[in-house]
Image 1 (tube, rainbow, N blue to C red):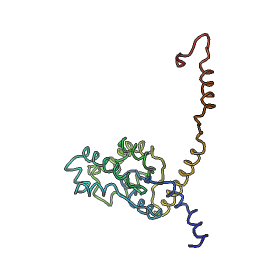
Image 2 (tube, one colour):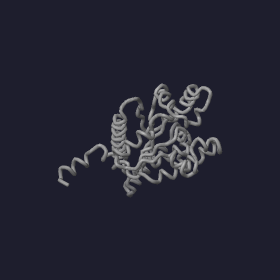
Image 3 (cartoon, helix red, strand yellow):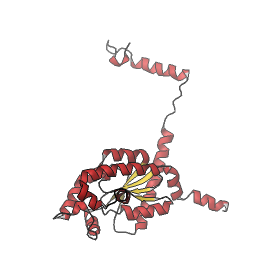
Image 4 (tube, rainbow, N blue to C red):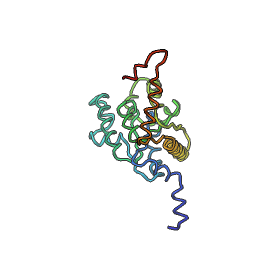
Length: 235
């Protein structure tokens, strides 16, 4: 490959993102119908890394569909199994991982994602979600008399938790490639922020000079104030 072509490849935004990821996963979170699977596949293709659908992995492990899992085992058991599967999948980065709508509600799952991934909330308005989910009948939580009211209630409960994600990208009725562009751009900004934090981190040397300096700071902090020695100074 010509030297110029190698340089162009190295400076592509996709290359910068995959380099910054290391062994982390890009984890897509958000409501059902927000496009986590369809957009996630395109993001993975753009970045040249695998795509994994957590719901598909759960179905494969259980040998039944998500709807049947809810019906046979109940939501509580499903959520426990979902958390275990996602924890296992996070060991396989770098990848793009699409999660189920309720997965990010689990605090342990959020902690695992924070440790081994970068979370992106695909945020969609109610009307957009309703238009999309009307086309499908495999959403167990929406099998109610009023799916619209159920969806609104779920959004009220979940959106504050989704907002804890590292990044937010609006999912809307535009070409998927546009949303993929925005995800790559947001990931590049995240990479730049990480680099700034790393450069700003102070370096502490454990040499004698610094130990004396530290002792001097402690001594100044422990000077008597108004005739009293602060309790934290000990003896």
